[in-house]
Amino acid sequence: MKFQRILSLGLAVVLALAATSGLALAAGKPAPTSNVNINTATAQQLTVLPGVGEKLAARIVDYRQKSGGFKNTSELMNVQGIGEKNLAKIQAYLTTGGGESAKPAASK
Image (cartoon, rainbow, N blue to C red; front, side, top):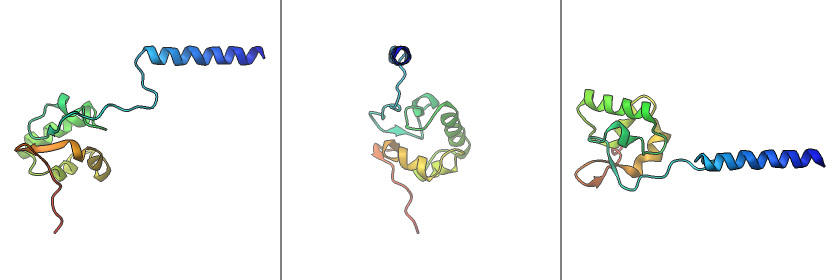
């Protein structure tokens, strides 16, 4: 009985510390509130996208600078670290400019 009390007290302390330190136990980062233009966004602005951290955002910016920009969002798959699954997660939050949401390239 004493062991169970100690265990439950320890668990309560751990959960309290996690809550006060701002750790989200099951939640990811919130979705962007507006579309992100992959042709003009800074690396910091790209990190708001789900699954995009600082390193991946830097690779997107480097690729954009070397290639002269993205014509469509499917070109993001040319960036190391972005595949079909990652692109599918962020597709709804992307634009290539012109105020419209970017569409993936049509299959031929």
